[in-house]
Length: 237
Image (cartoon, rainbow, N blue to C red):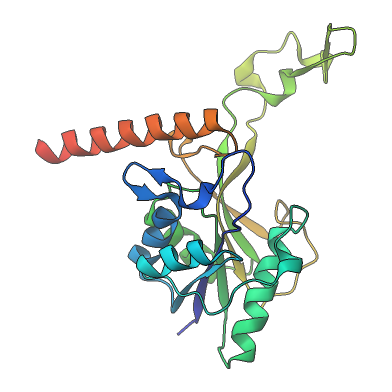
C-alpha cells in the first residue's frame, strides 16, 4: 500500500488580503475547505499544514489537520517558493521515520476543490510512470489570438498570423488551476511540472478561481454560492 501525505502551505503574512488563509469564507476559514477535501478523499495517511503562524496552526488543528512543526522564518518570506516549503515538510516527516511514496501539495486558497479530482489525480499517477499529476483547466479563449498593449497605448498581437483564423481552428490551451499537485517521490525527473512527465487533471472552469485580490475573493464567493445552490436543487429533485 502506498503512503500518501497531503501538505497544505499556509503562510501568515498575506498582504493584499490580510489573514487570507483563515478569513471567513461562507461560514468557515478559507483553509478549512482544503483540509476537508483532503480528509474526505480518504487518500492520506497524514494531512499536514505547514505554517509560520500560530493562529493558522490552531485553526488547522480544529479542522483535524496535523501541524507537527512551525515553519522556520527563513521559509516564510515573500520570496520563498512552494517547492522549498514542501521539501522542508517532507524532510521533517522523513526525519521522524515516516515513509512517503506520494505527496499532494494542496493550496490553502482552494474553496472550490472537490475531493473526486484528488482521487482522480492519485489514481492516474499511481497507474502510470509519470512524476506528477496536477489540476488544470482550459483557457476560455484562444491564446493564439491574444495581444498586448504597447507603451503608447496601442495594440500589438503576439501572433498576428492568427488574426484571420477561426477560434475552432486553433489548438486548445490549458492553464494551471492552482488547487493541487501530486508527486510520486519514487520517480526521478528533471522536467518542469508543465512537461511530459506530468498528467493534467482537467477541471471545469466553473470550479477554478485564483484568490489573490479582494475582487478574486468576491468572485469566488459568488461561484461557491452558485455551485451550492445548484447542488441543493439537484438533491431536492
